[in-house]
Length: 458
Image (tube, rainbow, N blue to C red; front, top):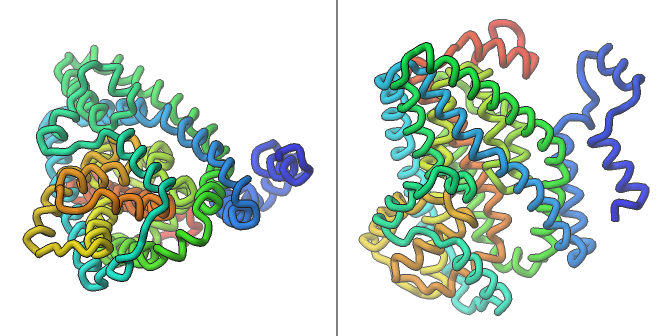
């Protein structure tokens, strides 16, 4: 495939260094050519992936490996980066009271917003009676088998006690090797407090070493990000090529209404939160647009975490707030996952004609408040955690999971994007709330990134 002239030209355009004429042009104008911009590359790759998926579905499905390789490379650095940032954030805070102030505010914010997200999915699903027209839907045996395999592979939490037990690692290295973000967070917090207990002169040496290693990991991520367009192309081509138009049409209403709920949460709920906190959501989204498109193309919120750790600190959030709030939010503040879980519970209930009273629905929501916290720590993401919740409730038919598995890839793009935006906003809001935010730094960064006039409002 890549031996063709088009493939070689595309690869050279996206990734290989350009000649001196282009460099001279870039330096004279002060801006790099539009086709070298990461946002443009990811969008173009997604459009090509969609077209390829429709034109050659069987071949396109085999390009899943590009997305998988890109995500695997990203995941190699996520756990170590979370560890270094959380530890450094706690250590640089200087005292436990400052850490506690940030942590308490973050947890309150996370619980409130997660509950709002669950309520939006529940209310929206009841208003629409989502899935009520699909009583005759019968998933194919292949889809059902794939869904069952995904659930079996995930080993999601099935009870509150299992969830609590699962967040504590049985060895230091195992949490990193398994990519268990909740376990890494526990280790990071404990290690950070242990570092605070050392004498200042000893602590400074360790902090300096951790900071240097962290910088190296960020450079490692910057290299991997050059392959984001290829990852987005492969992921989107696979999603379209493997599902085709049949599944998309049969579940179009669910997917469309889910996206409406996500848009409502981002632009109404988070928009209101941003306004109350004194900054513009739209301008902030424009500031992190590169990361949003990477997440949208790869359907993984982890793909943007390393860049956001750097970018939010440049935006004016203190190192302590970024190091504590953002990684913790990836485990405890999954707004997109919450909307997905509550909406899809009603979809399965209506599709199979299972009546759910408000008491049942509120009980399921209470369970989801716990199980949704494990989505980032479970292999398979939101679908596996949702499947574990459905199984734990015992009211809904497990066969309904196969109805959702076929279109999960399309929904996961919105889930990951909402989770990423929600956690980015949470970091800024909590930093402002705790007095760990620099308005002047934010204004200067806006002017630098967005080309705004001096003194432009946030």
